[in-house]
Length: 259
Length: 112
Length: 116
Image (cartoon, rainbow over all chains, first blue to last red; front, side):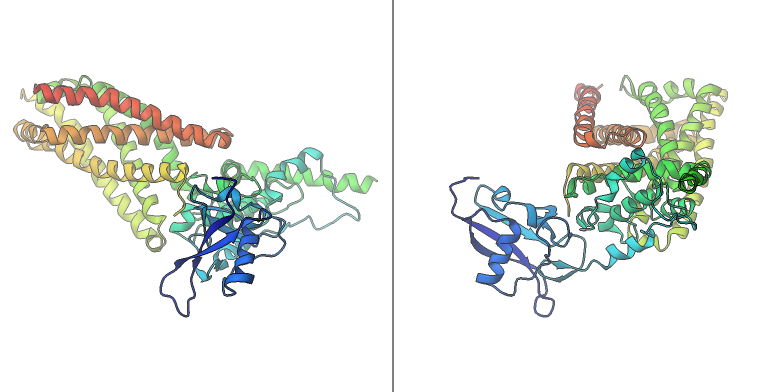
């Protein structure tokens, strides 16, 4: 990968369902001046070469989760990756849509399955009925434990990297299991037993075959596999946990009432 | 999730039994002959070990095959049929296997 | 297809697993011939002690060893928080399996070539 290269060859997978039978690769030359990111390159292609190249993007700061794509066989966010870093010896890079998902057009995929599975785990917090006027009293340790899961930006990189998702869309998926894990370990959540029962069904944590593609793909460096392992362990001691949680929630509110 | 735990528990059992099996049965790897096997297989302890081994190996194999198939969306729709088939095959194979293990002792007793 | 070390180990685990299930039933068929008497048993045993089957036996050993060690790797991952070492663990399983298969397979091949 020579740094003296002036232009890069960007190969983009194209597919227009109205015209094409199969996806094909289109090749574009992009200037490496000003050290563009992969997203800059795509934008440059769209504005100066071929306006029909279609892709999702929004924030350009790796936080909205729109621009997850498959670059040289790896899922990542194209907005925070320099084009130069992904060029091979010949100065080429291949950008494809997220794998295992139906393609709508070019680099845009249908994420219906992703969101359906997400909703299945009830991703929202279910707090106790008597919500305090100010805030819940949660210890710093409890907050720190949530960290692995709460920085997820729902980009779909892990979901579409998962080999199990490639075989069956009935699997809940790493993104949703990570979210379920976030709610399960949150001391404010009240439906712990229900959550653990849901994820230990046939399509839940048992379907994970610890392939680790989700960890490798996550642009935020999260560890869905570890979350799934934790859920597996927790789902074995549901009753004890439920009791513990109920005790914990008494102090969550009581401390508040004392003030 | 039940299948998952069946796999893990039988896996642990198999690590134990498979090690015994490989060392005792296959080393040194010389010509296997009827009389060599019969001596060992006639002992009740070996029969018990082999029956337990058979049980776990069938459990692990059939549960594994079930998981491999149900991971594919199309087969997962018929997972009850698959589970039933696995159980029937398992029961018949276990009976046949136990009969086989016990047969060695019988032949030795018969002076073969 | 999303090809990583994890994916390769997953495919190898499945392929070796399915191969072992098929082998298990063939094995039961061969050994089960004892029910029909020692003559049938010895005949069937001789049938599977030809050079072709000796080579297949090495493949069988490879499948057993890899599947077993990979299973141990999974059990370790389930029990301990070691997801950060996933790549090294995969390579460790691969190297140890290769060594064990060579150690176990060579005697089979040498024994076969000597023709005892």
